[in-house]
Image (cartoon, rainbow, N blue to C red; front, top):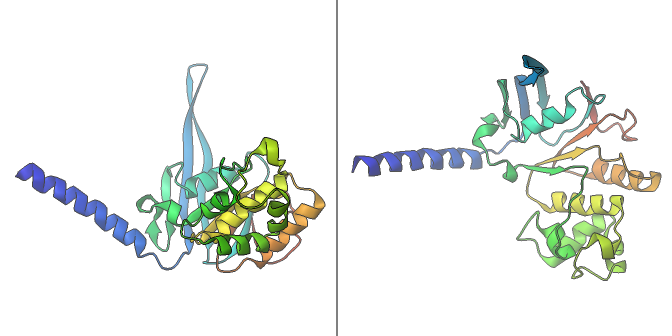
Length: 239
């Protein structure tokens, strides 16, 4: 009986955490005195490497920012801390005043990395994965908004299975499919790592326009390029 009671107590605590996560209504992000370090054992000599030290950053709900810095300055580490891939050595990160360690971040954050992995599924499924309740009409509308609808139709339509070898999708086209997936999702936060690093001028202008015009979503871009966007709608955070 005591074991049963203890298990119920643990389950109740977990349910309370999930409930508190669902009650997050405002999506301000706060890095509060965040530090991250790791131990390096080289030539049998232990060494502590400080990557992030006393980092503070406030990002308002629906704000658009660029985290700008040279390679090795900790840009990717900051994002890995935000998505809970790494745990802070000191300090904490909150979304809506709730510590991210208590949140299922898949409900809050979409991230587009540079590898741009797509599923071996049709275009409806690749875009709709961001919102499994989305209708075909909604998927097609979001595809049009990111200027990928015509490309999909030229490839044979939305029912065609996505295969890099047969579809010959360019880097920019894959990126727009993933942006469509992120925009159709219910996640309030979008992170993009070096979003224009492999784009030609035409595709870069398309992505610039999409990100600039996106509403009701916090957007965080990571880049080493000072001229990443031709717009002043993004706040720049130098690290």
